Image (tube, rainbow, N blue to C red; front, side):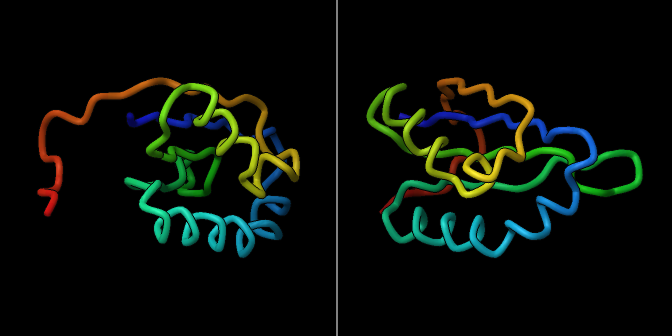
Amino acid sequence: MLFALICKDKPGSLQLRADTRPAHAAFLEGLIGEGKLAFAGPFLDADGKPEGSLVMIEAPDMAGAQALAAADPYAKAGLFENVEIRAWNWVFQKPATE
């Protein structure tokens, strides 16, 4: 099942995001290798600077999605003001599976 991790950064945390980005990117690469990441990227503010994240993951259930969200280095570093986790159904423009 797909879950959207909708993450909002704490105000004034751009440096924390930059400092933690290499570990976060490695974490996402690991999820790709495990077949658990559909897509991900930052939300941008009016100046084009990151202010949150949208991470679409595959997990067996809400508990699994929560565990993956908590394992993200951004979450561990305290970057996020809040994280909303929502089950999601990919209907249109879904990539073909082999």
